[in-house]
Image (tube, rainbow, N blue to C red; front, side, top):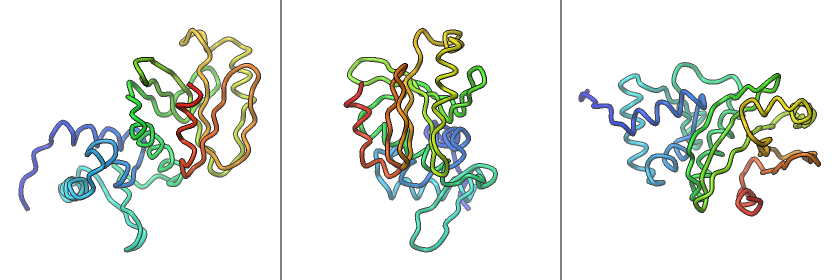
Length: 191
């Protein structure tokens, strides 16, 4: 087996997998390889062969899933979240910063994200709800407690990725996105 030299891009891929627990090959391709699948597959194979990442494929027809230590227990949830980040990048949204998960007061969001679009900066909480209903009450309690002001000047809007009906709030913006991302452009429309 040939030696491998870890590039800056490899380090970014490894960090992304550590942060989001797992990602599909196509997600990594969209994030770091300009959506070019063959170079992505080759590089991920090298990283896997040298023990930097682990890969899993449910069957011959399914896409490979990559992770660092062990396959996440909430695999689908983690895949939706990592895929969502790649969907933002495909919309030419520049991701400035993210934190997975993000705790503020007694609320734990799946993700906090700061991004730039059309030279303007935005912040959001992100929640993925693939099995249960989105709990807007915890965010309303956070809003009325004003504890979000310890970290932010305004209450960050919430992006909820779910196929269920999402309750809205009169106090802050809630954007609902389908888990297949068919309406992901809604984020740009509501900025």
